[in-house]
Amino acid sequence: MKNCYLKLKKLREKNNLSYDDMAKVLGISKCYYWQIEHKKRRLYYEMAIKIADYFHLTPDAIFFEK
Figure 1 (cartoon, rainbow, N blue to C red):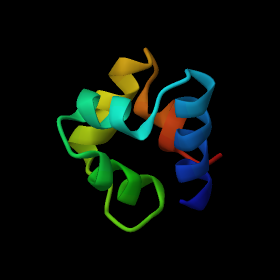
Figure 2 (cartoon, rainbow, N blue to C red):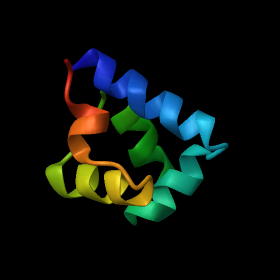
Figure 3 (spheres, rainbow, N blue to C red):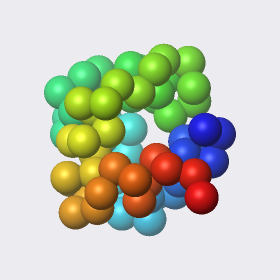
Figure 4 (spheres, rainbow, N blue to C red):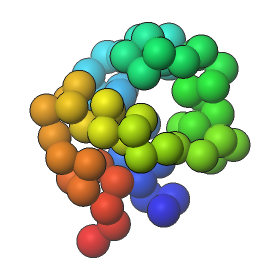
């Protein structure tokens, strides 16, 4: 699961998005998003779907470890 959070961070940075930008996409606070990316809070399925939709990817492409 560790690689999933790293993939999420790299995807965010590649698209020049801040923690605040991602928080707005998800409808949560910047602090809450930071905690997700740093494994302090759980990433819920609904949020994973929103993130994948935002980047036009499938959840598996971001969160599934091969």
